[in-house]
Length: 310
Picture 1 (tube, rainbow, N blue to C red):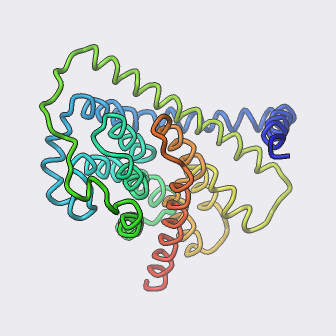
Picture 2: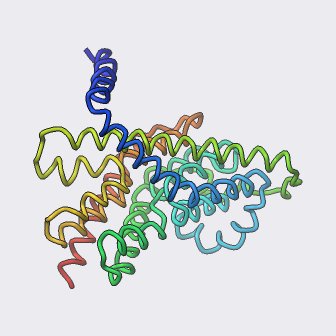
């Protein structure tokens, strides 16, 4: 029976797309515009630059500056601090990509890669501030509390996950993988990093378009339940999900909590993007999903506490 689920699901999806051509077109157009107008110009430059930093080992200058502070806090190797920085500042799925790139380059071990993935693949601050808080929630005064809630949750999770991944690990003992001088830069290397950047951003765009179509088609189903409308549907793609929650007629306090939880989780689309970044590393996506769900729960609790206090 399990072997038939996937073929039947694909046939059902294909049939639904044929029956709903306008909705399919609208979903694809919305996903394409989201990728082209927001994700491409925001993410592609960071992908290319981080590729160069890792490929040339130039990142060692950044890690030498930051590791005295971040390594003791997160118990990471010097190279691992670069993944922490990228994951908290650059947005999905850069934390996963940098972690996977460092693992492939043998700058961190697999145990540390799993640990880093548990907390340093997050939504970018610019997305939180400009899109979620200001544009959709319309509460500029919530910028700082939102940052605190969304950053504190994964940081706290790191203290829990290090007990699982950090035990008897090389990076806990202080082993470093960042020795050596930078690789000589040439335009062949630049061409390779640019092509890798376009390959990565194209895959991300494909997932965004596909999940935007899924979301548009699912909206057509005659289902109107709180869990369906406020939890399941928004969780497919974070940008569209935030827009759906912001437009709902529920209390603002509930909207705020749900939006914070969704941003923290990142949506099913970001999970698919993360899995794409991890190909070839041997890292399972299942622990990552569990860790993101736990982070979303912790985030929602923080958001509820904040709403109760104001």
